[in-house]
Amino acid sequence: MQSSLPFAATSETSRDAAERMAAQPRRIRRDHESILNVLLSGPKTDRELQNILNMSGDTERPRRGELVKMGRVVNTGKKRDRSTLWGRA
Image (cartoon, rainbow, N blue to C red; front, side, top):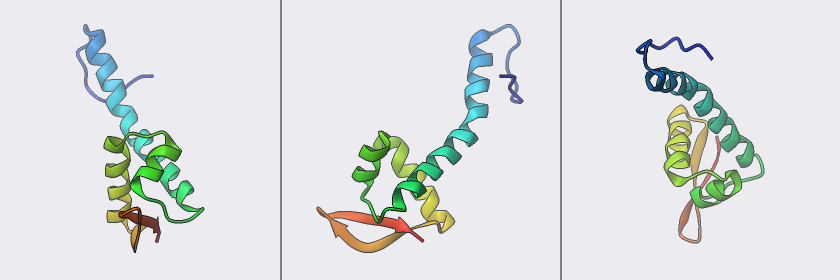
């Protein structure tokens, strides 16, 4: 893949890093869609989303938080096992 981000032409490491950074928006959109698709079956806790998607909490929580800020996911006001249940808006 040819990156649109700048990199040091003589450094393979720099080129690899630029390619990984360029892929971030696609990966984030894919993560958002995965979370939204899981929530089609009903509200889930963060832990449930992580388990279903095989996604670390360090990835799932920020992506879910972004979806909340976009107004696509909401706190249902309910809890399961003392954890917030998140649902589609």
